[in-house]
Image (cartoon, rainbow, N blue to C red; front, side):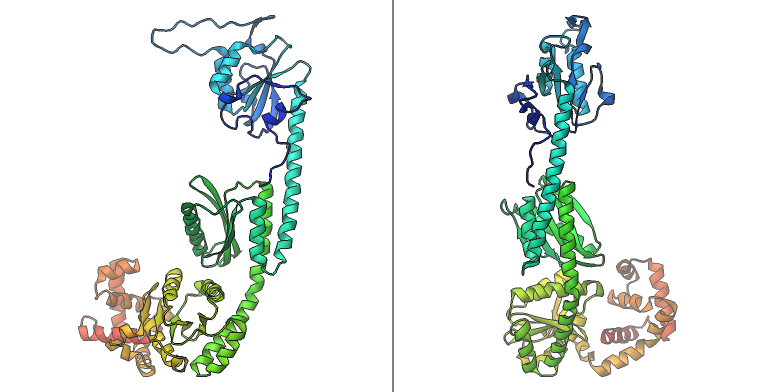
Length: 528
């Protein structure tokens, strides 16, 4: 973030000619940043142990009366008696400086010519040994002048920060009015914060970023990508921070809880109150822009669904004309038609991801809702995108054989059959399962017979809130092994055994018989 002057630091006070301060320490032996650490206050005390009355990050001023043995004389430490080969006990000045150091005092000012001339040598040595900045305050400079100067610097910095925040918010607001509003906003925020800023979509994919000081280290980028994806998958609106390789990362979600639209990541800066206010304004504008796009997105989704129906009905000409006007031409034939039933909680994020990929691959991707799941159309040689989609959204994706658009309806039916056989997060092709006997059950007649056979089980589950259908399906899928089914369902084996017994009573069958189990499994497969 932009620097502001004057800074409330010891270096700034030493630079004030009107204060006439003199650094008694050798800066070369002081810890790095010893003179540049921000100061919260300036306090004065001649107590031998003022630490109970001090706060962190302040300067302490003293006239040194605590080191006086008697009026007009400096206490000379008496060499302690100690056994051979042991470290001598610390002098009074050593113990004094150690207490200040432990309390978080950032510097010690010694007012000369008040009770003595010059700074005691023992105090100089103690401050040098413990890395405490020591400076001389001449008689003509009152201690209150230092306190006032530091308070003025704090007030000036606060004013400068507020001014910067207002200026930054104004610049970001103007950026948001540009045609590429979100991208321009990200770029302006990165410029104002002098930090890497990235915008992630609802699927956790980085869509735009700006880096005024160069791109991120690959390890940090990987950590940010992983954490952004994890935050978005949780679906809760949140702000969080973490460190990667010593670099601070701030994440802030966009959108409402349960309907997140994306996330902004800020890397490489510590946000103060004003910085957070600027980021909050960006979050509000970006969130509003994304929410305003929801209505338009629904209209686009309805139009895409209508084009899917047109393709299924064989009206390829209509689909071509509308798609070309809005999203570019349909993918060139031969194409692969995929169907992916999506959980309601992932549908919006999946649609947003596909919209972004459509913009990137103009003319190489079409998608839209269908009665049996989301329909995705890609060129036959570009099916890798479907694997990525399945993994990102834990979707069971089915694909039909490559076809031209005249065979779209047939390929769609094949994809629906394959999707019912696919596991979550995987892609199943119709050609791989077409030789299976169960594939022949996927007909209107087969589904009707299966649903009639399972109707008593479904009715019992709806009436009593039981889970007999799911339990029996899992039990059969695990070769009728009770323990394996219990583990898969996350319930006790006795519960599985009781449910299977109850299912037998509801269906009026004996599931100890293999033919009966096979018939029931066929019904479950055909019903989908």
